[in-house]
View: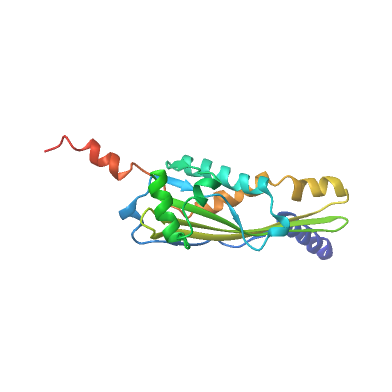
Length: 204
């Protein structure tokens, strides 16, 4: 009986995988800036050139935009040429953010870095480990928020094809859960300060 319980526990652990807590940092001046319009830069892969996938990057960016809109932010998604035209002088995220925010009339710029997308499969076992870092900078180049997260989900089945399909090939739910977890550490958006000033101009 005890042996069966241990086997069942091990199988459940394999099926549901594991996730580390989201590591996040929020600037104490976040509410002073209160960004409303956020430009999402194209997703960057770090040290993952052998597995770089445009569809995965698109999913991360699209789902991030949808999540921010649901949190009452306005979203701008510039294309790669908008990033490249910032010029060689924009050598760091702060200076690039200042230029992009000015060009796109945004309050902040969000960067997404996929730092891990590791597949592991055997005959009846498949796993996918995902790691990413998110960084939000104000239009003045000041860090406002950052979050780093990693998850690993795996499964153990007798049929190889449904196993690979469930864990590795159909990864949209994984990315959605990942994005939801990350943005649980970001404050909700609200009425932009510029709009507030315009609304209250008639008051004495």
